[in-house]
Image (cartoon, rainbow, N blue to C red; front, side, top):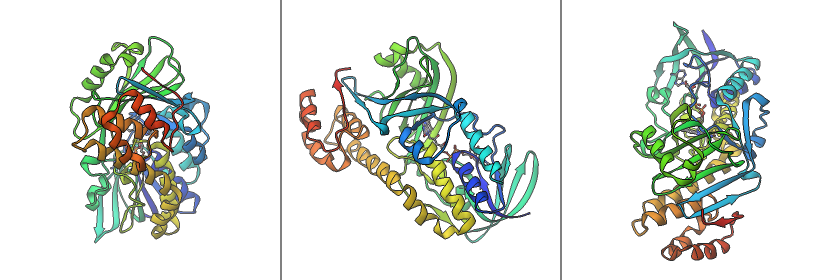
Length: 396
Ligand SMILES: Cc1cc2nc3c(=O)[nH]c(=O)nc-3n(C[C@H](O)[C@H](O)[C@H](O)COP(=O)(O)OP(=O)(O)OC[C@H]3O[C@@H](n4cnc5c(N)ncnc54)[C@H](O)[C@@H]3O)c2cc1C
């Protein structure tokens, strides 16, 4: 079967790509190996409100489990910063519903959409795909696409088959979380934890209503026994354990998130990579739902109208946000590997960068003052910072 565009993977990136390519008039086949698109969930399910508004996505009520009006950072067990404003407001979604909704939008736009259908092999002529074999609900089919959009996630099979790698091992964060019922009402904010017990990453409480939340952590590097570690952290952290008991777990979610930083619109021959397959997350936090969807839209339109425009269009649409995310992530890595800082100074610095209390450009001044980092010193340092968005600081 001849095709204009073959989309592999129907997460937000693939569904965005399939919808955009079909809307541009292409004959599109879009496949996902999952029997139920969106399940199992491997995600904290939170979306920054400003990115959501920019995406133009209208979420139906059943896809939204809660909204948060600010973000609280717990840095070490000594500082709490609360950031307010549009950019710190968030929406928690039900990924199982959202991902299906996006796949349905692609079908409505005219793409041929198939769950339970996996790419099994690619035939290549040099770096160009000439044909692909897809096992569609148990039946092997060969298709001849003009362009392939690889939206098949962080461990992209297409990238492996094409011999490329956009997500180096040391640029992948391993995560685990529990959806838990809380003992008392949760505040209407997302809570982020940076502390020695978490390592090079962060922990979170992402509300899904007043009495339920995704509670977990992710860290860069080889993380072992993540589920046990997360439960140990939940029990040990005084704030987290004041909300949750270990015996209130209703779902377990694990997965890997790419954080390489912005790499433009990666392609190889007639393959365009989008979403996690291309490392297109806000690298300092690993937020990828809306970035994947927006990058997928750009990849799909380019696949239909002119694949050579992908990188240029992507830089115009997402370059600023994804580039900034990479810059903050690089600054955090830099400070993490700075041998002159001790563990406490590292997570304090990482927390101040991540909460945008200290912009990456001011890191050197910050590092210079780091040795004097008592609470008073930090307050003085922050009050001189141009990027100050901290509304409240107190001992936790
Ligand atoms: C623990 C954790 C927490 C996270 N929390 C958040 C969060 O709170 N907010 C946020 O914005 N982001 C979060 N992320 C990141 C977010 O989940 C991803 O960035 C987002 O899902 C990327 O979308 P995608 O479409 O690129 O890839 P995916 O959603 O991974 O979709 C890829 C799809 O490709 C399919 N596939 C793979 N191989 C094949 C094949 N051979 N044939 C057919 N189909 C195939 C898979 O089945 C899958 O459905 C988190 C990630 C992790 C790991």
